Amino acid sequence: FASGLTGENPHYGDCPHPRFPDRLTGGSSSGSAALVAAGVTPLAIGTDTGGSVRVPAAFCGLYGFRLTPGDAFIRDAFPLSPTMDTAGWFTAFAEDMRAVLPVLAGPTEPETAREPRGAYLPGSALWPDLDPAIERACADAAAAFSTPLPADATAALRESWRDAVDAYLTIGMSEAHAVHRAWLEPHRADYDPVIWQRFHDAGSLPPEKIAAARRTFDRARAGWAALFRDYDFLELPSAPSVAPTKAECTPALRRAILALTAPASLGGLPCLALPVPLPSGLSAGLQAVLPRATAPAADWILARY
Image 1 (cartoon, one colour):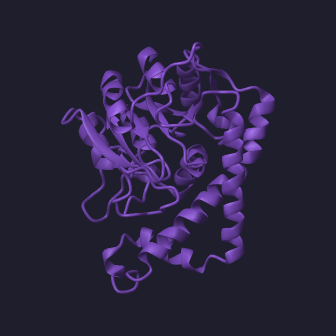
Image 2 (spheres, rainbow, N blue to C red):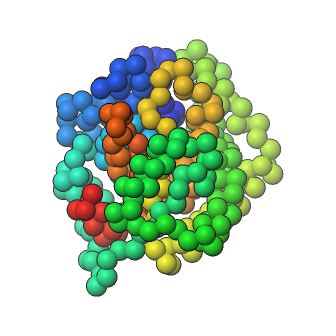
């Protein structure tokens, strides 16, 4: 069902991190990330509605790419939230991602006379409790090809993303309920109880809450459009922590992840996910949010990372 950001699975077992088996891969494209991180395959596909490529890429130290809603690659997939569902994939190496991008995303647009202009937004601007070690590592990695987003632009972007997590959950779960409503009662025992409850409860969301979420959706898209008038990409951390243990997979972690990933999901924007190694051997991740999947900034970043 493409739902879940941690890699937990009550049906077939949780998906362990291939190098740290006491931790999880992240999800929901858990198995795909695990296989690439373990060296079983150089490429695996997944989905990313709310971060399901970006988050496992960060936790497993992988490169990832999220396409856009409505792309041909996602149209025949079983839906979670058709407004925001996207396809994506993982590679272990930058050169593999560079080879795959023009094949799966389409030919890269010609480069302009100037280098792409990128900005970096600290994760703590969206989630104040972000792990300081992750914040430092991501800022250092991003400094190679972006500059800090100015204060006025940061304030404008944060305002455009106000209530982004709630809007993402309201739109996403209301659409998931519409997909699943005929099966929720007859097949209740077959669902993960947590997923069943989310989908079921979304059926009683008041219309005014859904309407407010759609207004936030529109405001977020307008904020992204304004940003891309001045910049070619925006970088920010993909996840607020390293790969979690089972005990750390809490509702609070889910909300912290969505604080970082939901803005691009509402924007319907493609993202290039970059691994950020940490001294512990674990990893963090950067997401470079792009205006288009074929934008030359993606290859430009990969060539320099």
